[in-house]
Length: 247
Ligand code: SF4
Image (cartoon, rainbow, N blue to C red):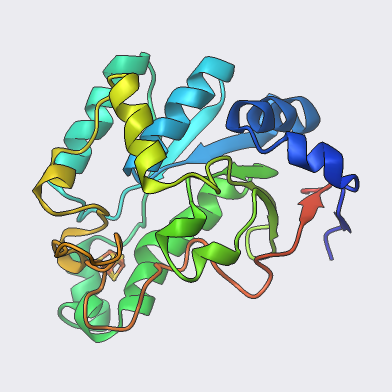
């Protein structure tokens, strides 16, 4: 059993000060060491904001994305644009199972019949690999995105991946995120202006109507709201991996 310890941020006053995203990122890099910290992004608007803040704090933190092989072409275009903008390369993680092989193994259109299995193959397993050599996973999730995310915190422990999860934008609103994009003239996925506030894979993303939740177009009609990357029964606890304990 890998050792973890509870509430390393024992003093709540100190924890409160870390709620500024840049301060939290500085603390994270200082506390764990830059080699043990990684950011993941799906190239949504909060991800672009967080990337910008992270690059201002420290240019050398690695950033990865999960390539399911069925992302929107506009998402790949944004990835390339961001790489030019920040003079960087994202680390790419992907399943070893191409879509054709998935069809042979599990049948046609697995995303319609068993989206949890499809997400597990194309997202969760590659994420496990992506995080295997890191202690800290920086993410752009926000409380106001979904009902499930509202119970998340700025600092959490994720047992499945054995990482401390840092969510610097956890309390940001939709408006704050877009204000930051506009004030800093940052690139974003052009589909966001065409009715797609949240983008995943092409097979599982539809546009949303006015008044709908930002993620209402993800797995529409299936009851599924998350790909399984972010949530398990341990979420909500403030537990962090002790530096050096990962292995
Ligand atoms: S979002 Fe859809 S296509 Fe993408 S991995 Fe999940 S079920 Fe499969």
